[in-house]
Amino acid sequence: MTVKKESRVYFNPAFRAVNESRKRYVIMKGSAGSGKSVNVANALTLKLSDPRNKGANLLCVRKIDESNRDSTFAELKKAIYTIFGAEWERYWSVTNSPLRLVCKITGNSVIFRGMKDDKQREKVKSITADEGKITWIWVEEATELTEEDFDILDDRLRGKLSNPNLYYQIIATFNPVSATHWLKSKFFDAPDPNVLAHSSTFKDNLFIDPQYKERMERRRLRDPEGYRVYALGEWGLLGGQYFNNWREALHVVKPFKVPDGWLRFRMADWGSYHPYAVLWGAVDYDGKMYIYRELYGYGGKPNVGTKESSRQVAQKIADAEKSDKSLIQYGVLDNACWNRQDPGAPSIAEEINNVLIANKCMPFNPSVKGREQVGEEIRLRLEGYKDADGKQIPALYIFNTCYHLIRTLPDITHDKNMPEKYDTNGEDHAIDALGYGCMSRPYTPQRPKKRDAYDMDGWHDINSRRRATSVWGM
Image (tube, rainbow, N blue to C red; front, side, top):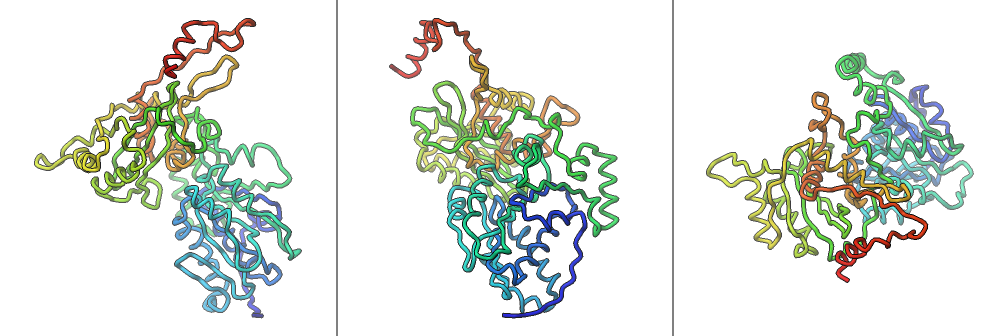
């Protein structure tokens, strides 16, 4: 199909380097309102519509697959309507279920996927285009992805391209979060000839309305730290992060089969309008805790719940435990759930426990409350101890399948009025659940044993041998 269409799209000069780059990694950090996502959508739509780029295909990725509908898919549709106007249907085919865009001029397509779990990751590994190859990947809200997720996407861009005009490229767009995030160390801290690391703010957006600028000015006066991160697109201060000893590379591990001999338990924080969070933990023979399963009431947006009933959530808990319910030793739930709103009606905790008992699952017990103590227990486990060689050994590990816990834990900040506690105005539900679990298994850091030339393995102490023997039952 040969169609000539003259389009006029105005691009922000702040993104010229981005739009002209052929580097493999274009990493775009920007504040809210900077216009980075609109720019990417317009630029990619034009490139996919250009006959010179025949054989190119775009993969759009969000951590949660469904989130594409209101972000990448919506932005690209808007770009199509803007560029081609009332005649857009002559040039593009738009399918809402499943999400898919196909350019009628070139045959180039746009595919949308998520990276929430191993099943979705495997689908990404095997994805193919009807014509040509996946050449470009747009990762929106890239801070939601783990470094392992990103590496899987990177591996998708390989093989010889028959069209000399084409090239492989990953475009990542995101609002900055903690300065400890892997995106910063991977792409911003050291120069790399294959990387274009770009930063933008709302001040760079020529098309923003005056009212938005006024709102940002009010935020600058009321919340300078929030303004610095949210409006200026700077990395979060380490001092503002409550769990500043969190390191994803250290604390997040790949799933493995949890030994039957490890103590297993369940911890939960209730929510309906806001998310509920249920975590399953296991404690090994040395007292280290592993969070190996997560059930989270994510309503499609951060800090928005699913509005499910307590009985519905309880049934989901029971269903999740079909493979190991006989191994769950106990459960802890926010003690506020035992409060009765109506004296004649059961409490939330009673409703949940009734369903669990009916499914022959372990019921919940009330948690110990207290943000300061809860936060301190999590910190202690994140820190762990240092062995005789000075290597840090955490006492808390999280399976990389526990997406929402990993997503929200590094973003928790200090309470502005009581800095020894963490701020509960954020999305703290998985952290609360984790804290209840940690409070139920108080942790005492180990002290490294001194070693000498006659004892490089630490076995000269008869008491050490006895303790090890009793733990392993030998």
